[in-house]
Image (cartoon, rainbow, N blue to C red; front, side):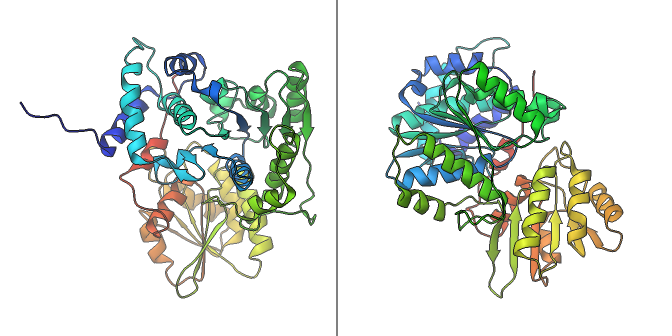
Length: 429
């Protein structure tokens, strides 16, 4: 009798791919049931829960770096991933090993078979509970816990954190979160729990009113963080952009609020902020020969504005070539209008996703916004990079999918077997 081959990493990834068929589900019922069957690992952990439109990942990276510098064993849960699916689950910034992901997939398969009919769990629901189990097994002292989409009905919202952090409120994912800032704020602020302190850097008055109302309803102390971009307050040396000052201030305020539960010295806070690393967000790569490539996954209008501001401040003497690709469901016409005046040459490409915007339509939008620019389309990022091989400064932007492809192409991340496709999903609301 032939012995059955042991499951490998490719098998685990293919199993996760299969879960994409069930789309995305807004609600906590299935996640709570799966967590219960997995032993409720969230009850063994402490969390800082982070929601918001932009800056979630950077704020999470700062918090993780500060608490790791302080000597804690820190779990980090984020999405989407840039190249490897394992980026989503990290302990002390070490990606979950392939062997551990294989084991978790094996252990969860029998649990998933207990869900019948239309109760199939989605990829994000399953991975959320897998992450909880792994963090509990790893005996993490603290988990920095980023929402996937929204907050109120997001699978991550089954935890009760030490603090709820809302970075900001802007327009993104309107088809699921609502078409006004008030509606979006209500979803994001849904992570606020009774009596748990909340911290926000939201500025829009209509969004802030909703956050304040929900904090009051939950008897949650609310701290609002405001930062003057021109202030000299410490910002993380390794992350460019004035918007990172706001993210840093948000992280600092959170650490300050939690000092009684988790003391951190001023020295360790400074060390954590100085050493923070978060790829694909104003990440500058200098190649042999001096060519500079700036990667930034600005995928909504606010992100594009932050990129424009950063270019004006840090690269004012350089006129970049922009390589741009976007998802069709984003506000790419306005993103194109925001970025078009910054470059004399723009190359548009499709993103490696079934949801990609047409590169020709992107080119037309740039041409309309900047008729004097040299506009080209290429069939993929590699061709676009080759087309700009003699250019001293290139900006790659419009989508984290494109940034992930760039990191892989530039040899800054080990190539994986098509794992970026695991970022794809649809809803089954």
